[in-house]
Amino acid sequence: MSRVNIETRDDQWLKENSNNVTGSNFHQEDPDQSMQPRGEAIEEDTSTEDSLGDNVGTPMQSYLKHLYRLDLLTPEDEHTTTCLLRDLEEKIIALLQKRGVMLVDLRSEGVEQRGSTGAYDHGLIIAKADALLKKGKISQRDRSALQNLMKKFKAQRKKLIQCNLRLVIAIAKRFRNPSVPFIDLIQEGNVGLMKAIERFKPQMGYRFSTYAYWWIQQEIQLTLRRNDDMVRQPANVQDDLRNIYRAINQVRSEGLSASDENIAKQTGLDIERVQSLLKLPGPTSSLDDPISDDQSSTRLDYAPAGEMFNTDELVSNQELAQRLRDAVNKLPPRQRTVLSLRYGLISDRDCSFRVIGEQLGLSQERARQLHSDALRQLKRQWR
Image (cartoon, rainbow, N blue to C red; front, top):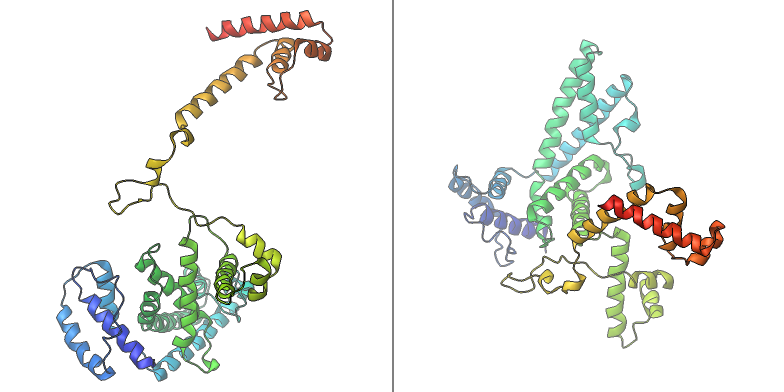
């Protein structure tokens, strides 16, 4: 499908949902049948914008209306904006270096580990520039130059972000998931868009939107992975599991058994890796999840009573054990030792009076007497 048709379908969806007063159709997929020539979409732009008026619905509807009023960049304008933004960035960094700011202080944490091509964090650049201007330890000439550069830099960056917010909407629609609200997917996609702006180089030879697509998609996918289950698994584990399940279906469709050897051969993973991943527990679920459509009963309602956790009983037992330890510690050393050996308070194994006497160098009868004396003192403490 051509790029023109894709943009037209997304624009049509944006118009329908920005005019949706109730918001009931917001989570429905945009129909592929509602495609029309680009010229017709442009003609409807003015009429639709005028019909929006000043009525404000939900925050999402207001956001969509704001996006629809923004003009898209042409390829020429996009190239000019990215080149100007990169040029302004280099001039600001050079001026910050002149004032003693290190380049490493302008890079995102872990950028080199992600294999970035020398990208700088625009948020750090703005923060360092604002801090330098607030300190006042800068000449008037450098101050004026830095202020002018920052004003142009923020304007071009904002322009590039706003003109590509529709692209984030279009990509987020393809990754809708019940576990993550749609507005959160858009927010994470916007983060990916800003990362793409920091890393894009105009000399690469292709459009910024083509480059930004993969950064936006990556941030959205990472969000889905983080919220896919209550127990989070690393991204590489999820990718390998996905390949393993795909390989299982593939080998079964070929009439072969889904053995560890066949799966390892199909996926290219080590057989030890396949075996360890297949032993992982399945997805977790909450006991409060409803088990029927009426949502009147949950999994917790059908849990056996004997397996349920009694918090009151646990707290009472802990308090009783602490009081017992305090009472035993108040006894004379020999009586305390006899009680500890007799009831296994030291080694979790109870001993007979004969064994206690042998360990303490006492007779069996003397060990029994010490035991009786200790119990009488404990009874007095508990009265």
